[in-house]
Image 1 (tube, rainbow, N blue to C red):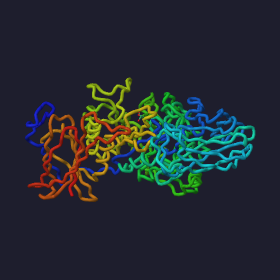
Image 2: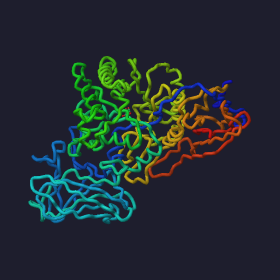
Image 3: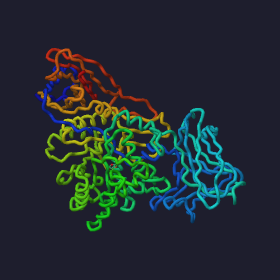
Image 4: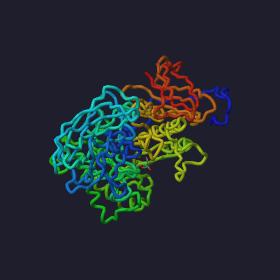
Amino acid sequence: MLREYLLLPLLASYGAAYTISVAKSGGNATTNLQYGVMEEEINHCAEGGLYAELIRNRAFQGSSLYPSNLDAWFTLGESKLTLQNLSAPLSSALPTSVTVEGKGKIGLTNEGFWGIDVRPQKYSGSFYVKGSYSGTFTASLESNTTGKTLASVEIKSKSVANKWVQHEFTLTPNAKASNSNNTFSLKFDSSKASGGSLDFNLISLFPPTWKNRPNGLRTDLMQAMSDLGPKFLRFPGGNNLEGETIDSRWKWNETIGPLTERPGRPTTWGYEETGGMGLVEYMEWCDDLGMEPILAVWSGLALNEDVVPEADLGVYVEDALNELEFLTGSVNTKYGALRAKYGHPKPWIINYVEVGNEDNLNNGLASYTAYRFAAFNDAISKKYPHIQVLASTIDMTLPGSAGGDYHLYDIPDNFVKSFDMWDSYNDSHPILLGEIAATEYNNGVGIDWSDFTFSLYPWWIGSVAEAVFLIGAERNADKIIGTTYAPYFMNLDAYEWSPTMISFDADPDNTARSTSWHVYDLFNHNHMTNTLPATSEDAFGPLYYVSGLDKKTNSHIWKGAVYNSTADVPVSLTFESIKQGTTADLTVLTAPDAYSMNEVGGSNIVNTKTTTIKAGKSGIFNFSLPNLSVAVLTTN
Ligand code: AHR
């Protein structure tokens, strides 16, 4: 019997329950990488986000796309700020510095990434200065609202003429600022500087970071991820890997080593990045959260549709192999030795490499299928046979043991329509669901890429639709390597793409874990090691579900979502191997309405309710799920 719940207006019509019977055995083993994180520099997700640096435009880096400028910097007192490319720069990677000149106490102020969070904790700062100076520097945090100094420290000058000298300091405010509208200032007494001026570069300030790593990551955002327990990290993109042009592609070797050696680059998302969050920081992030790295290497395609011809591709393939040697080679290899020099003698393990990003777009597919993918795939597989190489698309015949990457941005209804898309995927090539998000409201048609009126945040009906799709993927978890929402982060003060999994501003107290975060959190913490076949006379819709087992705990798991029902859906669930009296925890997520969302600075609207229920006669669990709900039942 096929039920058309959408046509039935009354609760009374649901007298008969969805009757589902779950077999003792069968099904398929699932991957261990169910839910992960996709990361690239977009929406200031790293710079001004996850990367904990508080000073924006700290080294005046620029490119032909985004020339060096004084963004985020302001004068202090009677100062004049001038950007210069001195004949003796701090480094060839950081050629531009700022000259501060004027009379009396002068200096410069930075507004941070649209504010600076100030609270009683230790802030570690440093700056490079050139010029003879016999006085002291004053570094301070100040309220932009009241003008009050929130913390201040005097730093004795070590500065000399014709040499860049680093100065380090710490600031320890003794109270929390009333908001994040605060600035950082650096002052000196120009009467004690030869010529009344000094040159500054790489002015940096970090709050405590996750696991106190130097050059590390912002703790509240790491906490939000850690709580969700992601299993993999796909990085560094995304369009940002590709670059606007071939030359502005993401170059791994320019993101490693001392910060003075990292030139930065123009992102594909509207701003210059410093390179501070580089390859090693990504790997440390994986280490800290126990995530499997899925490393994306540049594949010879830029967003402006420039493609590297076959004859010239070798150098880029070599570059990808060098990157892998840097990450995984012994200290006796050239690049393994470099990794050791930068503090990581122990090689990392890379099991997954993705070649490029969305090579089916930007006129890339013909060259990708003709020679680009094969060149990388062959070279990587030959040297590292254990690595699962992934194509960045499934719009091609995947060769050998290669996998593919599928992306889905759509309206909620289309996510639900795609529920069973993996049931009919009978290919042996594994698939990564590398970018998934309901972005645009239901409109009866589908996503409009020319319009881009995407929701600012994930909203509840979109998150439930994603849950339906995730359930479809979990039913086929032997074919799916893992799934991640994308993009993952958004700084609300400067974003190009919404919605995202986690949104934030300068104030960590405002960080919003989205409605989708709550769905992924629930599913991720109830991992099935094996699916179990379920039979029912009732067709999928409005209830969608998957059942399975966690072999480690022997707990039976059932995940369900109700999308577009006119009334509560009664469920009668039997596990063949469960006896009468067995208890189970049923967790149900709901929200006030279909359009509720978790906003930056707001409170969480997702209602999570866990009840313990007992299996009745013949081991049946009877319960009821409201419309637009996501549920997990786990037996004890
Ligand atoms: O996630 C945002 C962008 O969407 C990614 O950079 C790109 O891969 C996709 O088109």
